[in-house]
Length: 96
Image 1 (cartoon, helix red, strand yellow):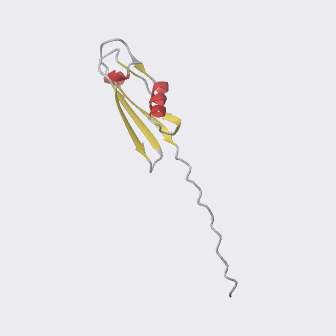
Image 2: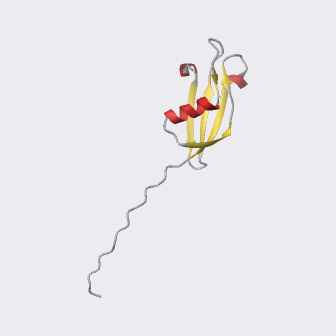
Image 3: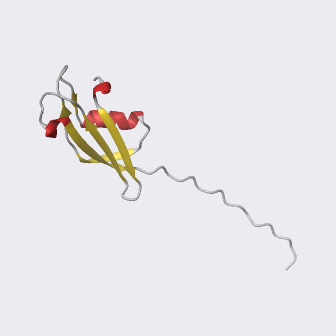
């Protein structure tokens, strides 16, 4: 797949824990299709941790219909686990 024919915009909404990936292309040229698996591949390449798809679509350059030239996918945003803090022992002085 020639990724150069697509305009890709990724937005992370950490408050809502969602990933939005917006794709647009122009009509003509060699027929290309961008589907959910391609969207997942882009997110993986960018190192974005994501869960299940909430909204799916398909974008292709085979017509002039704006509904097929633009699309938005929404995925769950998975948070990186926070490292646990090391517990420290309190020193006892022996004097109370």
